[in-house]
Length: 381
Image (cartoon, rainbow, N blue to C red; front, top):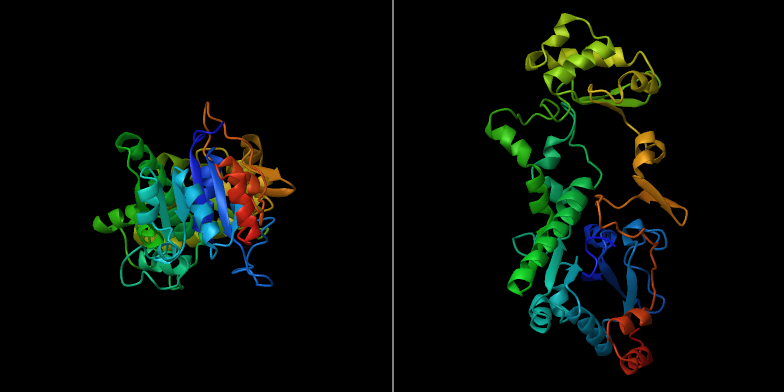
């Protein structure tokens, strides 16, 4: 059983970071029930971005599909929430309040409830009601401006920073912190997780460098943005890429030795004025062999070198295979739950179950047979 065994979570179906946060909680052993809104007959889904039968972010949940326009369905949702430790939702501010499922109502019925709210801009502020996506939230933190090549435009780092890191991960951190606090105080609270806030927090190290005078606003000219010749990716003879990152002088010296970069010029590791020239020379040298030939020479040593793998190669890499970093569920290759625990081993993930009516879930969570029958009769289930 995972370390969150016994924690009960209600998730209101949403896109992006909210389902990822709920997935992480489920991966760690929490019982997560996902409430999906029942669409009107013939209505198209709000988004067809994902195939619901394959959407990995929705793994390991039980599902209840409710028509929240029906009073009976709202009553069922309130009863589920009353029995939960945690609620997570990812709507714009005010949506849950208009449904009658906001923090005031739910905490009155369940004072120990941790109410996790995931938004881009936060619950208040001038932009709180505006639409947006990861790229927009990332822009406000200073992070997007800092990513890219010299003279080039800002480079989009997928949606890893705002949605996943600053959003989902920090929502999980906030929820778990509030659950621990509730065990001491007996009182729940609201967790306001905004992707703008989280993205800014993830930039803490860069703001430290800036305060020290060690960071410039020019993209691709700094220590960790590809400006240093010893911290970047390089194209090899076969068109594949190698990442190198030997920041510490002993690791850098080992990289030079093993890679055959013998010119004394390369020893001037911290001469920033020479970085552009040295990068060109490192690039020319690494372009003389295929990627895997360099890996055979350098990977697994303190030279801090790794192949840049694509999404087909990554699951097959010997290190990932040895650790079980990727798993297969119903024929779908996907990342395994993380992190690992010495005792509390989570159960294997289960595939998503979209659109399930969820009568069994309602019964397990305490709804009476009469209440479930009435819910079905009025079309709320």
